[in-house]
Image (cartoon, rainbow, N blue to C red):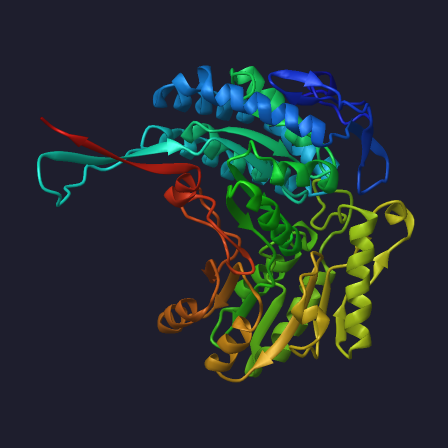
Length: 493
């Protein structure tokens, strides 16, 4: 693919947002700059939508929901999703480059997401023809037939973060299309370009006007109005716990359905019998992947005391050998953080760790020299000597930082791992099958990985416990989030 083949080049041009099947500017005429986090250069400008733009998009979504889209048969929705998947496959290199330029994810990782994203779209296509109710015998006198119908919930408002624009967009749009809903997507202002490219591909695939709308803008100016809009029947959100709580409050106006995938402080437990040759790289990348900018980052590493020192030493050597650089370089393993604001936040955690007495095994620095000077780079960092009450062990960092914590017994490890308000994910490393079952059953988390990490499949539900949110993405459970169940009673003469 050459640059002339790319319909959405990251060349600083001003985009439009996609509403009711057309490309439009914000009513205010205002725009937001988006920058390459590796170089600081402006790579695009997008409309700065506000409440008025959201209102127009929601109205378009409502018209589409009650209009032609409501008459699409399941196999037609399935065929549409399969066309979308084929277009994603055809333009995957362009999608990958867009994600890398917009938020810094290394190109090797964005390219590797192909299987997952295409799998999601084709899974939703399959599920579009598998939605059904039940015929249920009732105990009322007389001859009455009773059954249930599964019906689309209506207009969906989706708000996504910047750390995985493609996967997050598909995780919201895919089930909406499969179930017959319509959607207004509000991407993060930090990484809005790929969602606009996705809108273009969906338009090419033949998605009817108003079914998929993408409104760019800030959280307060566009996201909040979407969350509270009375014309929205459901909100689905991925992001911080604090914003999730605000969305719950905003949803009260019309009691809209809400599903939330929020923050995490995921524990990884390494038992003394673990295969360290496998555990070290997996545990490291559980926290360092995407520069730690991932909700399931395994940032609390509980290590059985007998192997603690050896594992930490090996972890430090692994981290220090990772190649840091521009995500566009195929050799890069650790890219930049998404913004200078995020870099400042992570640097604050690094300082806090040192100030509270943790020992820096490796990393711990913001990179400012040479090719790093204009980007948002920080070294992958391993802290030892960490206690559970330190800020780096309690709070979500969203940066490439691991806190190593020794433990003596499995009961202790599980108790400490669960001593957090979050419950999104967890990891376990052991060669003992009994331990694997006992620990995974005891951990209060929505996903538990044993001797692996980051395994996500469209057929399996993903979501959190406690303050990591509620609702699920993936699996049949996700489709239920976009459906209402109606009971029907027919008295026979």
